[in-house]
Length: 154
Image 1 (cartoon, rainbow, N blue to C red):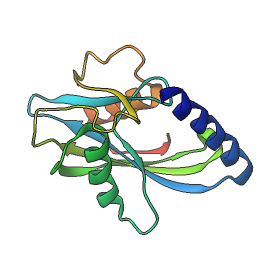
Image 2 (image 1 turned 45 degrees about the vertical axis):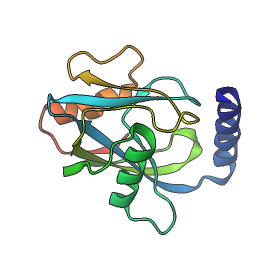
Image 3 (image 1 turned 120 degrees about the vertical axis):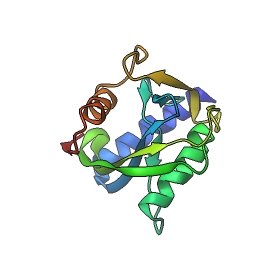
């Protein structure tokens, strides 16, 4: 099934290069009570990422954040502290705007909720990120640790 997701993701990226859609995404710097950060590995792309995803048509951005946290890491009721920043990405052929929130999890249990999409999920110390953590994820974490409000290019 993971191979099918990888093929579908490649096909979607090809379509995006032709159609160049404008999209809105949401991600979370999701922290637990011990200030560990939640990261996920997807089945369709390599690397560790902040949990999140696309905002559906007709859906509020904050609603999308809570839906994605439930879908990706089985966390419900996270408390949003603030917006870290709004970023622009042209990767994958899209004109993508990503809103990144700082949020606190009310639960310590973290797991990949959707096995078709999430290959792994875990809590990590901010100074001990796993190998394969993507550069953009590392930049967002560095901005958070420095107390900055981010923005600009993803």
